[in-house]
Length: 125
Image (cartoon, rainbow, N blue to C red; front, side):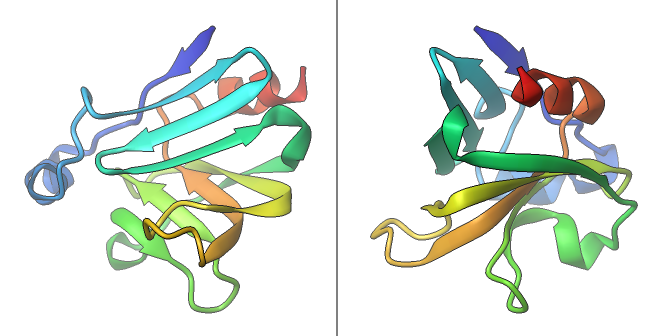
């Protein structure tokens, strides 16, 4: 099992805490052929075979990245904790994550982990 922690910018920790997103309730795990992204009450779980690629992204504007965010342009999902940089993970089959019924699906997930390069490399293997 490989774990990746989110990079928490102190300027946004209070807002994230109000959303239930803390270092204890968030993280990325890669294990047994699966990717699990936890972000407070939100999560994305998908087999690694569903991943088509990963791209380094950032920097971002705070209002576009902090928290669990849905892109109205492409339905992409973001789990954001910092404006510095992150990793956008693309999927063959869209995944659910922002709402509990699973009716809304996302073609990509951007995560602002402390080691986005390491996560990208881990997803390649």
